[in-house]
Length: 272
Image 1 (cartoon, rainbow, N blue to C red):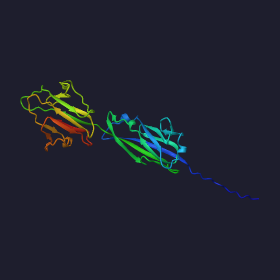
Image 2: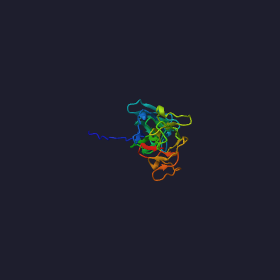
Image 3: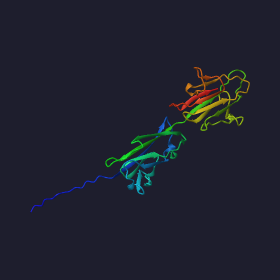
Image 4: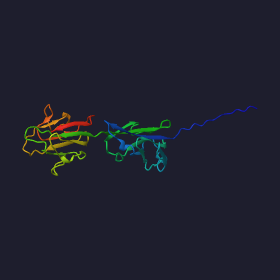
C-alpha cells in the first residue's frame, strides 16, 4: 500500500547575534599617527532595552579580532569590557538580542603622539547604541581624530647703525606647556627668567603647538634701543587682546599669539 508521508519542518528564530566594534584612526593635515597603530583601545558594552540580562550576566562570550588572540568577555551587572588593538574590528559572538550601549574609555586613548594629538571621536553606523536582532548583527564604528602639531618661527631683525650682529636680545615664551623648540649654543638664555636669545636675523621655531592655544612671546627691551614693533605673518595669529593695523604689526615688545584652526601646519614667522 502507498504510504502518505508528511514532512514537518520546525523553524527556530535565533535568540542571539554578534556585536562588532570597529576602531579607525584618522590623521588630519598630515598628522603622524604611527605611535597609535599598536595602541589598545578599551570599550565598555552595556545591555540596554530588550536584552534578557539573565542570559548575559555571569556568562562569558568570545570576542575575536583578526590577527589577535581571542578575548573572553564576561558580563557583570549587564556590562563588560572588550579591547581593539590598533585599527581593526572586534566581534563579540552570540550575544542575547536587544540594544547595547558602547562607550570608549578615553583614558585608553593616547592624547599626545610624537607627530600629532588627539582631538576627539566620531561615531558612525549605529552610533553608540547598536541593536542586535535575529536578522541583523550590531555594528558600531568609532573614529579617533588626530590633528598635526603647528610650528611657528620667531625671528629678530636689527636695523640702524647702533646694533651689531654680536648683540643678542632676550626673549621669553609663556602660556603653553607643550611648546617645544631647539636652541643652538648661541641662543641659550642669558638668565633663568628668559627662554632664549637671538641676534640679527636669528630665529627659533616653536613646535608642538595646538589649535586654540595662546602663546605669549615677549622681548626684554633694556639695551637702549627702540622697538619698532612686531610683524606677524597672518592676522589670524593675533589674539583678540591685541589689535593690529592692516600690516599686522603690533607696536610693542610682547604679543599674544593665538594658534588658529587652519589646515596650515607652518604658521609662518613672527618678526621682532
